[in-house]
Length: 228
Image: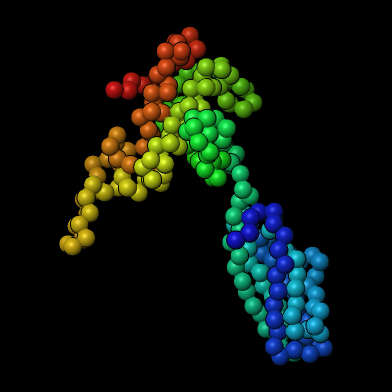
């Protein structure tokens, strides 16, 4: 599977073919825009095999359409799924780095650490950080106090560690209390966000605790909820 930004060589084999055979490649990007391949498709064996260079400028599903005229005429479509460039974190605020995650775990971070950091930051921002009062940078929206910054980073890392321990980043395990294969009986959990339920929308207990450090005095930080 290619990543966004990759350049790939694609090809089509035409049979039958002769000197009248011409193949043209049209690209439809994930945003719906279309263009012909640049440079144009070419052949090195008198029209049997045609190749073209494709630049996958964005993540998403690309449609490659080969249109053959002359002998062997026809139209062939191919869908190519393109992944985001490795290390991409999106456009939201991220409250910890992969270095901080490695130091928190006392181990090498997972290769998708940037994605996990972005996802955990988004979750905690929605569920915890929005309930807190602290000074922020007017441009980035990130906390400016070093103690608050450290606490937020620790909370994000704790959330990722919890996901790793539960193996349930997306929250699927928290949807059901019991499952019986023989009778196909399913019992829905009382709350998918309860403390005992696994799940991507559940805030890890350690993430709460990182925001209750004695260093976080009311003069620099206030948490708008009580955790028991």
